[in-house]
Length: 502
Image (cartoon, rainbow, N blue to C red; front, side, top):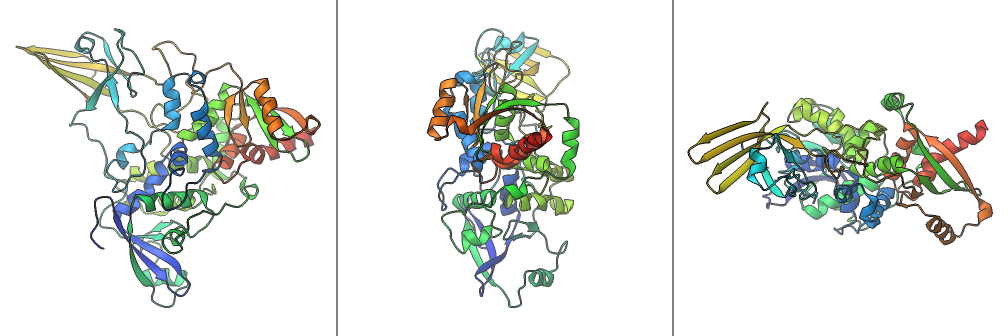
């Protein structure tokens, strides 16, 4: 392939000249790692990224964009801590370490950092050093903010080599399926499967950050199976809306296990429904439902695929996700890597206690704090965990190993909390509109919303329902599609079944 600049990847395209369509692309590790990193992105990050201009115009990520924007519009006082709002607006990547050295990384989220008390005596004399992953969020025992950044020791191996092996040529189909010659097809078999009789034309293109963002936009929102053709051959500036959700609502497969595990978990809500067409105008809900809803923003694409199943109608990201299952383990950096991409989960400390979906949370490594003092010169780093504290005095040198207590950013004060491990405060009620805009509930805001919607009182009815995991999964599924009616789409079958029972 042609020589590449530091933030550019060359991609070889095979084109059917007669039909002006892209057959497939030949790619090596650098580009495949970038594609697979899409599976590690939280939904909130995608909502933020696709709202930016690239070669394609900015777009909305279904109702996830509405949910994301409503977090930005909510007052800080609604959240258990100020950091909770920050966590939702910039959710961390559960596999951020593996994405650290990507040739092109479109995720602008700041990597995880660690903070401790700036005072040496608090590292020397305390039973356990308090550690936070957000600057100035917590206070030390002495009352000082945890504001001093502490780095990982160089002896700690942080995996940052991407996902797949080098020295392998991968085939990327137009719908972002990733295959290898020899496992599924021979070269001739691939051409025949694509219906090609004449030799295709080879075309080399340079991939920059704009093209990667274009691919993400098309892959996550379009029902088209021709993502690469749309970007590199047709050079579209707009993405067509996807089909109606209604034929895709059935939740299938292994996820019945999730429902069985949570069959007794219920979330109550009062729905205001339009009688003439069954549209859910809004729901009045408590903190527990809002925490679950906001947690959608922290779920990685791969976690959504794991929860909903591979047939999740997630645009061409479904094809990319399925490819991870189909690729031989030998092409990944390790067998564990394949499993991690199948279910990246959520980043450490981002899981809520109202975990009706049984989301996998990546756990933080356990560390000790090593501090060395030489006169007025003090340095600290996080090292592999030790069983107990240790202090060594030698001349002017003092070396201290201290155990570490990692603090929860969703809890404002150590040992005291009204958060229950969630993002928003209770016992306030919240209003959730059909397109998943969340705001504190008030009678005046509800009346104002109905007036703006031009709906008369005689066309409205209230329904009090309790939903379980199946309905939450349906809301999640509806929220990631091109829809402004996530609640109506997801809950209509449930509401209808209640009516029929009566």
